[in-house]
Image (cartoon, rainbow, N blue to C red; front, side, top):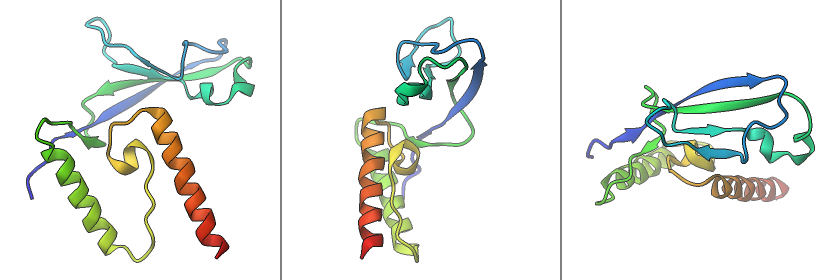
Amino acid sequence: MAQAQWRGVRLQPVYLPETALAQPAMVVNEPSVTLAWTRSIETKWALPELHDRLGTLVLREYPGAEAKHYPVLDAAGENQRTQRELEHRLLGQSRNPIHTAGRLATYSYINMDVAILQGLRVAEKVAAQEEC
C-alpha cells in the first residue's frame, strides 16, 4: 500500500464572553497572507435558541497539525484510494459494527451540511438496528 499524504488541522479556541455571535455564519473561510489560521468555526450557529445569549466560542483552524485527519486531495485519487483501503481493513477487523459520519470519522474533506446529514443518517440506522 502506498504512503498517502494526509492533512492535519489544529483548533485554537477563542472565548468571547461579551459577544452573542462573533461571525456571520458557522464556518467562515479566511484565506489571507495576514492571518495564520485558514477558517473560523462558531458552532453556536447550529442552535438558533442560543444566538441572543452572551458568550460564544470561536475555533480558529490552523493547518499543519501533528495529528492527520483526512487525505490530501490529489488529481490521481491515490490518497483517497489508500484511505478507502485502510477503512475496509478496519471494518474487517472489528468485532462490533462501525458507523462513520463526518470529516474525522470518514477522513474526508466535506462541507458541514454533508457532515451533519451523515450523522443524522447514521443515527437513524443505529436506532433502527436497536429496535430489532
